[in-house]
Length: 253
Image (tube, rainbow, N blue to C red; front, side, top):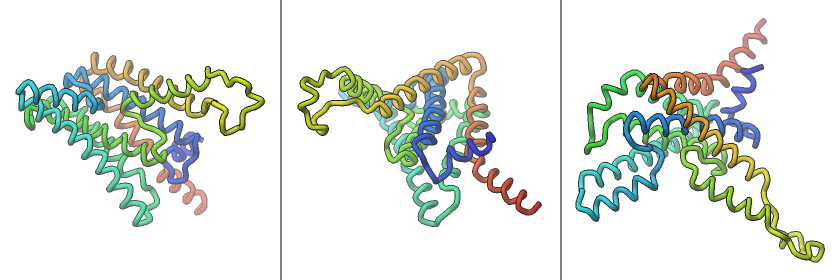
């Protein structure tokens, strides 16, 4: 049943399969937000490397306000990640049944706010940074930290630099020629981790696909394009609870 599949994606009981499927889902959402968000606010809100580089350039050139704006965006991303850590660790420490649901619901709420009143938020600024940019950076940090904690740091979804680096490393191992292979000790043989290569290729591909869909949706619909993403996250986050309720109702009957 779909409810069983959806509930497994955000269940505390993890497997490599559920990590993969949740990872590609969130990677697609991150790609949509990143590419679509650029059309909305004029910058890529998951690109913290670029943000920090821009801040250094602006400082050297004497442009203090733009530098402060880039650093504030960086701080928003970090704050989102910190909030995920706080929420998830609190849920674990207090033995809550659904430890990932609160973060997913918070992200869904932020995307819903962004979609419904993003135009108004854009009119307000903090150090020349529009509230829409702040919300997107915070949301990106929130999501990236969530999948990082869920997968024990195996998966990142909001940026692809590390993913492409790992893909290159594994491809290098894949084409490496192990000379005199029969004489090598197993620990000396160079071999690609095919599971890791497949995972990272899928994450990059789905980030790209999400980016195309997100950019197209923002181009034609504007801020409201994030509402379907919000609905998807709400369904994903509430699936374990709904499954439990259905199970209890069957037992009563």
